[in-house]
Length: 544
Image 1 (spheres, one colour):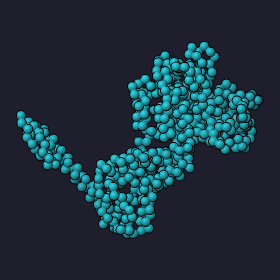
Image 2 (image 1 turned 120 degrees about the vertical axis):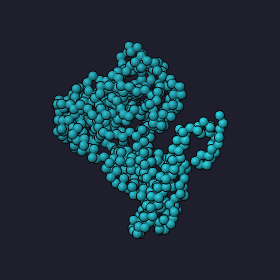
Image 3 (image 1 turned 90 degrees about the vertical axis):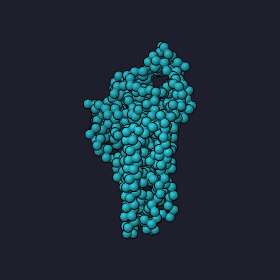
């Protein structure tokens, strides 16, 4: 069999076997390839023609006051300066607008990288010719890079889509602003319409992709069973409420507000050096007490929840900590919501996590009992939480801080040998949640339910090949939940033996003890916590 050289449809000589040249199938494939190439060229020509027609039509528009305004708006979006200013404005609003601004900045980073770092070098395209538009619309210093795609349109669409994912209310004005910026790039003659359309699609995709690292919280509070018969406490009658002024941000103290809003309640301030649980128990033993309450952070709430459990009383929660994770899950975001719920006598049943810390593996000594409302952990996880909260308050926001803190913690951590329900493992860190968290991955965000009756256990294995490097790559690409070094399961109880000696154990962000054997379970009885009825959810959602 001989080979013959034949030119392809680009005019290049290609050597093919004689048998293939004689094959009808091969000729058919060749025809389809040539026809496909011609069809692609025709479609591109059609797009170019349409672009020219649109730009020419815009060029024939008469001068108006909108011309200098669109030029100024287009320049303001250079290097996304406009969107960073909008993000700063959103940061001063609600929790939804703050998350929208943060997501928008992350989306811009991804969209800019793809548009300017990848596609423009790969797809060179000329900018519109200067003669298609009047000179008074031209920018003083027009860009000279590839016209495809529009980086300004990509950033605008990325930011607007991200804001809409978190706050439809804010999107009502951000989206029109983004659309105007995208159009301005055609109006001033630096992009074709198809460049802008491609940029918009790219930006929207980049915003949607942020859900892999920053999940959208689509509920304002977790679901839980309503409690029948929770006592109504008008103006706080029958309520003993303890204010931990040491919780939360400096200068934020709800004591005076609570005294005024709940004139019939016994509002006490936790004295320096006093034990929170003992102070609350002593106060609750007074006649007429029908409920206990706490104003503080998650650690204070956990201590008060144990008191409520011991006394078989409902708990009123006033979020007064720095982050208030538990308050957000329950759906009590401010003092007024707590006042409304206690006055109406509306409450839900919330599970408590229980941890018993033993000094020895055999568990012969009397264990220390700890109640937690959110999470417990050991290994690198407590250090990760500390770094995340430090960086979150200063600069970055929760999710970027969480990922950075996890990477730093992994770099510093040493493996810990453990036996989990009888199975030996080597782990970097281990997390136990009071109920299942979302999303899947090592950085949990929130709980959709508060009454599942199960614990969620997550850990990173250190006994896999290249475990640390694999964890870094999985975190950076947002696929940790699908990597074999990451383990996640729901269970009703967990028995942990620390094979290399005792470790410090954290619960709800605070170190609560040190032991060699840890036993986790869900407490036998949930605690009623005051929260307004579910029927108010639609009204709350409108505030987003």
